[in-house]
Length: 163
Image 1 (cartoon, rainbow, N blue to C red):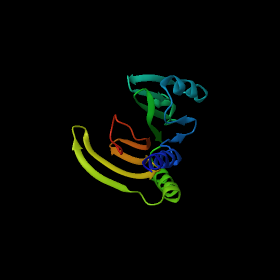
Image 2: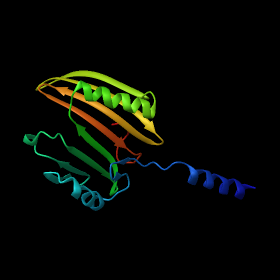
Image 3: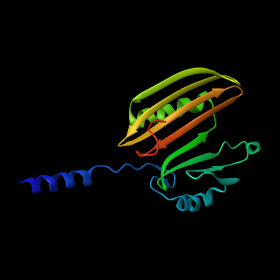
Image 4: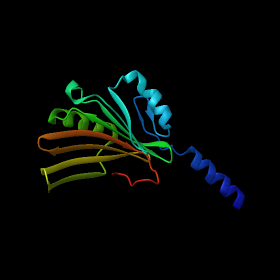
């Protein structure tokens, strides 16, 4: 009887949805080399290793494309992806509307302001769960810089989600 319970539990766990985000061709669990290879058709101006756990692909600012991906690795596997978008209230509204339609109401909303050495910093962020993954939208403003970020994190033992 106990053996049957263990087998049943194992079957249930194997049938549970795997924690795996997929953004364009990037999937959680990829290695750094796989991500580098997948980046080639994007023809970013630069792909560089920011740290042992972070790879950044971006276009030069003067290009005005606002294309940037930040890939975070935990134990050698892609566990987090952050994609920059052109910051505007229109884009924030479109993304939020799309995500609410796709994922429902966010499980966490954060609105905060602080003062830094370069001025006021304002942040508005929204987080949803997709299976075990966390999907986030962040709008940051530290004048004159605005930033709109889409975040995708899978559970891992390197950082707490949402970040």
